[in-house]
Image (cartoon, rainbow over all chains, first blue to last red; front, side):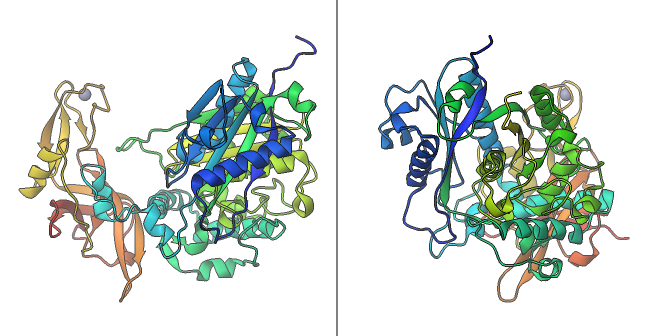
Length: 390
Length: 130
Ligand SMILES: [Zn+2]
């Protein structure tokens, strides 16, 4: 119908303060703050929102009660969403479908978490120390598979063994992310980082060094999805949600298992690009979930930015870095800016698509790919965002 | 060493009865005979939920592994792996009594068990004689 567009578009984003050491605020307070910031960014009030999707992080500190905290009444959509690091992308997808179908008019999607506590190591928290493990799910824990670095290290080792990928290749991803972070005022890690620094950083779980692993942050991020028509009348340039996809590979415990060799991006990427009516060469900027350096490398391969197995050489070529052929994780990613699960790549994608990246703004930013990833490559989401409706 | 004490629950009780007597029990499909990993609830090949138990022969190969660095005094390292059993299923397990720098994908391993104090017996593997 000409003139009436219910194409979903992002109208606002809110990012709370999130230095390493923001203590004393709860996950829920961070989430509420993020929504207030996102509404203000869009030029909306809380009462204008009629949908709320919530993704709680590792501490599970945000729930449906967030709507009460914000005094939201008569919501037409309210749910918690949980697919780990792919949740942010998934929330945008569900919100977009609600917008397109008229179920809701303005949906806030929010993530909030506060895992950092004074005196507690985050490694211990993410490894689930202190909980009494039992049953089959405890067997890997008993054996020493405690925490994401160990799982991802095993996945990465397969890639290294099959394709000749090296720790130095992973290092190039870390160095590239840091170079971008140095231009991002919000980034937590802004000191220069060299390949040598990466190689000299302490081992966490071989093949991973410290600088292969992401940060952990306290904070919240919210995004408001509305219709393109409505977004056009608001404060910020609309960023259209043009295409999306999800893949949950369900790696089986037998010889069919491709964990570490092929990620969900191989399926969700093409699905999202097809829906958006774009091809790989149309993508100007890539914002990739980077819980580990390896996650960026395998995701870029599976999206098709390079041939399968050539991710190592590709990242070593400087392709992802400032001035590279496909600017990637332009805010510094989770490795160097802040760790808000899938909201890290999503928030930077919106900033870049709007052209609000300041010193780090990429020249061509019409079409931005956003990649979410959860579990150990177990859950994958892709978004294609654009400043143009078609 | 450094296998953590864990407890059984109702679903895993028979499995841990097995490890206590030195058996790694796998789930054999009563319908098609396929051998599945111990925690599997429905046969990977035919989807049947009717599964019995069969003890593993005790050999397999390292499919991938990580070397975990433990901070402590003194610091230590342990090797965790995905082991592909000769019967087909993969399980996560520790590789014990090995120089971490001498482990490779494809190495043949043999089954053993460790029983940490206050916990159930847990399968571990050793690198087979080369
Ligand atoms: Zn069967």
